[in-house]
Amino acid sequence: MIKRTLHFSNPAYLSLQQNQLLIDLPHLKLLGEKESKKAVPIEDIGIIILDHQQITITHGCIAALLQNNAAIITCNQTHHPTGMMLPIDGNDIQSERFRYQIDASRPLKKQLWQLTVQAKILNQAAVLYERGIACDNMVYWAHSVRSGDPDNYEARAAAYYWKNVFPKKLQFFRGREGDPPNNLLNYGYAILRAIVARGLVSSGLLPTLGIHHRNKYNAYCLADDIMEPYRPYVDQIVLGIIDRGENFLELGGAIKAQLLGIATVDVHFERGTSPLMVGLQQTTASLVKCYEGTARRINYPLMKVFDSRRISLYKRNDLDVGD
Image (cartoon, rainbow, N blue to C red; front, side, top):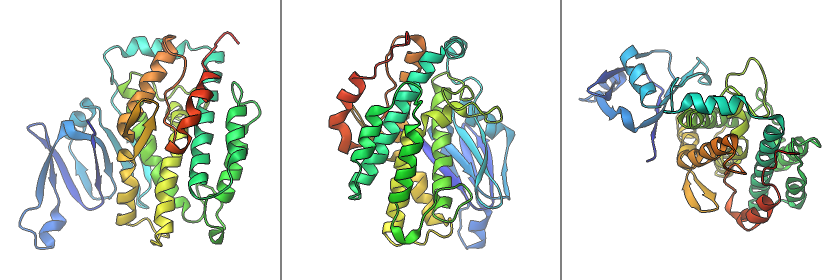
């Protein structure tokens, strides 16, 4: 089941009533609407985004959302996500999975990162290919990535990708504080990060303990690792906004709505297609199996243009933690 993403960008009062999220939107009364209240079943919600400084949410509502494995994102006055709440116990055998994750060997983590970087580069290459931009070098780099990516092919591919993926007239430079459309990318990645963190918790994993990212100030190192091959799906949405000539200088409501659609974008796996939020559960579940030693690769989606390359890539890169 695809969980709903709810975004509140106006004053609102959110409370709990009979396991329903009761939404009171006072601004609707000011606009002449007869009914300002709505209700959504708590169990249908996957992510809730609080994007206004005059939103009130009751403790009972927060507790019910977290109990149903929803992620709660808060935004600052500039409408950028600044915080996230996730449930503490997202899985029945969580302590066992924590132990597998904590005990994971360095060779295992390095080979998990190898698979992650390969999938990311191939998906970036697919974005370039669909835009008619040369990408054979990207495919070569993806197949050349070794355990732990000691040759730093991820950075090499990123430099080429960001230099070429946007129209030349934008003179684009990727940076969190950079000029638009960096604002769109930042927002889309923040939503994606929340979806990934929620998926990790649902699978009984600690989103703090990464396989590559290790910043002691970062509570979501593993989410930042696992989201890497999914980032190009956000890039595609942003590129579509630019190609259609929409005003991307400001992060308006219409553009936010498109970026929130990342949860339902179709992603392609070896055994079929699913919405991104559902597909992420396949990825996080496969990661658990890698930690447990019952699987030999993370199940990442690859964009359809490279489906034919998937089997040959993964056959060469099954986990061998004895290296």
